[in-house]
Length: 440
Image (cartoon, rainbow, N blue to C red; front, side, top):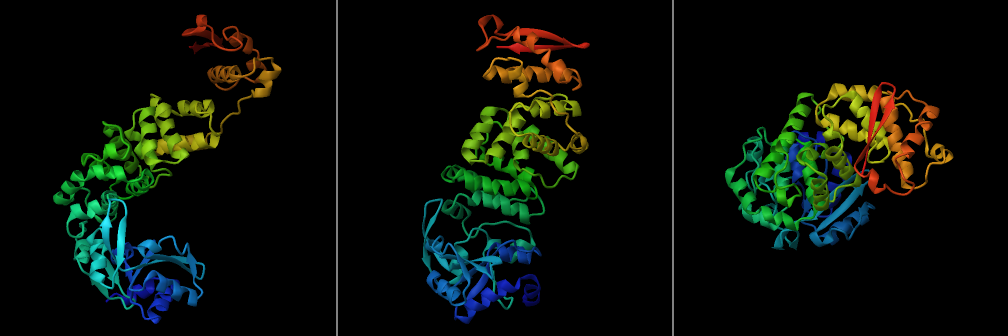
């Protein structure tokens, strides 16, 4: 049925593995998402096989043909063996199985020879199809018809499928973004079951949730699907504040689409626009276990760049030079780029990229040589000198800035701010400009 397309689409390594297992007397078919993508005219990113061979039988065949086996015991409990052919392409071979017991996160499995039972335990109809080496399609739940009509439906009872593994809620939205042609053509019964079972996401680890959500944000209808997730009352279970910044999120997404910025360096750049405060960021990080870079990018957005009004080249240049989070300068630049991309400010981003930052002429050793008090005050003095430098339009040199130190020291104690300087404003004239320092 699909033999010619199959032969032109799959690698020699794929067919080699297929023939090894078939030659040993086992029935083997390409399965799941790989079949879905293949039928949709997409090149599958990963090829998974389903087989009547038990894990032990699969390993025996692979060892006979000297095929590399990756972590041979890692997935055997669920019947999965991972192989790499000729040290190139990686494949998963999973024994046909049924789920005999589930707790919403993982399943106890029983191996079977029944292909329909294996298809029935899968999540979506479009993920429950198989193709054999001759190109014959095996479709037990009308998955091909759903794929043709761009429908995303669970196999059998949607509520039951979700309760077997609550992560399927997010997988539904991710696959919807890959398959659907309209962001609003959800089956209402499916949406009702998602709402009814939303609290089950509490059982799912933050890392798994974030892995799925990143793919949703990076795919088609990422904005609409995230808002649909919030509408389905998932927000509190996936780390969002009670009343997320929907307006800011819509605006950022619309601007991004308008300027044809289809792929952002960080999907978190868009997600961050749903947050208002540092507390929101830390709560999201606690739930999703984001990377340090993702967390810091959110903090940079909420605590610093989003507070600039109006945003301009000079304001982001100063944000870069002042480096309020005291992180690596290349990281500051990438965060600014990410924010401007998320806001659709392409021209401003291009200008910022062309700008060559001036070098602040003072370093820590200059301050120590100038007999500045050691400790935390050196950082405070450095920050104040940077403000003076900014007001000079970055023209003041090392000697001129060092001459400003006595003016700053006049209001700074050697160890900590005394009560008389708490909440005190100090004015310093630089040319025709007046700098205002606040303490306390």
